[in-house]
Image 1 (cartoon, rainbow, N blue to C red):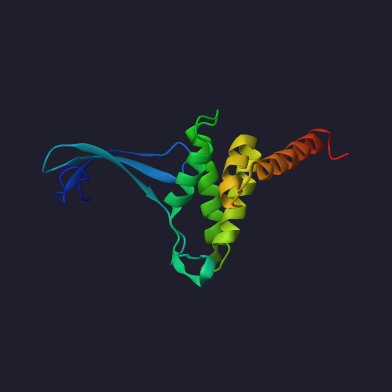
Image 2: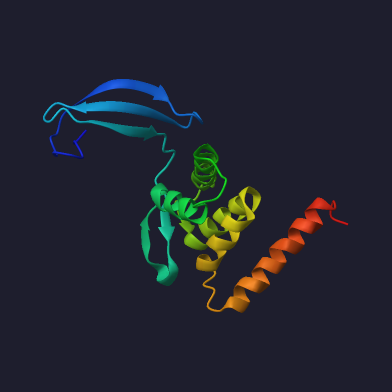
Length: 159
């Protein structure tokens, strides 16, 4: 594994253990060139998936894009990293087990929306504001009202 500090090609694994959610292996490595230590994660990839973007552009599925989006939506919210990792792993698992070689970015966006809706309403609204391209304050107000109505409806048992 290439060192992120000096770009030396060889490193030694010093410690390996499963991640907290058991979906990856965490490895502590030490560069044989500069001696720096760094962490890598190894994850199972069931299949190669291509994401179909708007305009029919295609690119390989990249888990880190979901991780970054979810982390940004949950920034300064009382959501721990383990819950975020579980959300992202669940979405990735859903995508890989769909059986399709290609998945529309819209489908992924809706999966993220649903996951955030269940996790944190503020993060859900933040993500929606970018995903659904809110342009005015009224867009936020209308969406927030619908989220509040959903919450009241769910708490009251759907009555």
